[in-house]
Length: 373
Ligand code: GN1
Ligand code: MG
Image 1 (cartoon, helix red, strand yellow):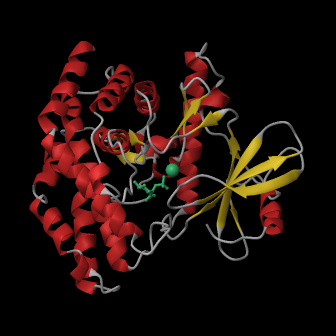
Image 2 (cartoon, rainbow, N blue to C red):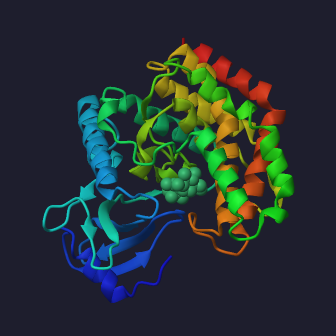
Image 3 (cartoon, helix red, strand yellow):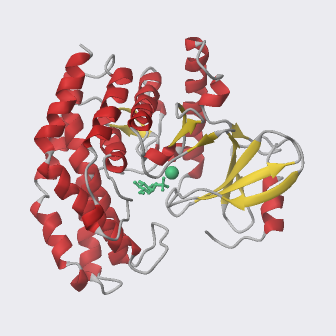
C-alpha cells in the first residue's frame, strides 16, 4: 500500500458525492492490484470504499468503469424483479458513488485514477474458507451472479484485459520472461519450470474443449477468489465484489478460480507446502451451491468442463506468479522479496494435489449435477 497522507486521502474522498463529512480514511482489504481505503463520515451510515485503480494493470479505466456500471445496473434490476429476498437490491449489489461532477471515476493531477463504492454494513470476506456453509454460500453467490447476468448481452461487456485467462498467452509471457531474465532469477526456478512444461499440453484441454463454439462465452467474473464474496453476519452470501475483471469468459474459469481458494486448506501463498491439503468436503459444498444456481442455464458441455477449470486455474496462477517473479515483481503487490516465488510454489503444490484427486472431484461434479436434473 502506497503512502498517501491522510489529508490528501480526505481531499480525494471529497471529490465524490458522499453524504456527511469525512472523519477517517484508512487502508482496507488484501487485494493484490488496487489500493482500497475505508472512508468514515460523521453520519451513522453509509461508510464508503475509496479505491485507487491500478492503471498499469487496467490501461483502459473508462472501459472498466463502464463494464461495472452496466453489470451493477443489470444485477439491481434483476434483484428488483426477483423481489422478497432477505436484502434489498442495494445491499446485494455494489453501488458506485459518482464524483460531484457526476463522473464514474476521477483522475488526479498525478495521473492516478480513483473511484468510490458504498461499503456494505455488517458484511465480511474470508481469505480462507472455514465451514461448508461458507463454501456453499460462495458457490451460490457466483452461480447467481452468472445466472442473473445470463440475459445481459455479452457483446456489451468489453474485454478489458485481453486473454486474461488464455493459458497459451500466459505461457508465452512466461517464455518471454525466461528469455529476458530481467531479474536474473531463472537459474533459481528450474524445478518449477520443468513442472510447468510437463503439463503444458494437458492444460490446453479447456481451450480444446471450447473449440469452435463448443462452450458459450458468457459474462463471467474472472476473479472468483473466495474473498471476493461478502457474507453477512449469519454467513449468508450477500454481495459479489471486485468487478474489474468482469468480462466474456467460460464458466469453468470462474469455477476453477473459486475452487483454487476454497479447496486449499492453506493460504494462497503458504510457505510450508506440506500444509497444502485438499478439503474435499468444501469442494463438494461449493459445487452444490454453485450448481443449485447455475444448473438451469449451463449446458452439459459446460458442466463437463468445470473440472478442467479446477486444474487449470491454480496452474495458470502459478505461471502468472512465476512470470512476475522473473520479471522483477512489477504486477502483484509483494510483501517480502521472494513472495511471488513462494506463491507460485504453493499453487504448483495445489496442482499436484488436485491431479491426485482428479477422478474423485470429477465424480462429485457429475453426481451433484445429476441431482439437479
Ligand atoms: C489479483 O486484486 P485481487 O487480489 O482480487 C488478480 C487475480 C489473481 C489474484 C491472485 C486483475 O486479484 O487475477 O487471481 O490477484 N487480479 C488481476 O490472488 O490480475
Ligand atoms: Mg479482490
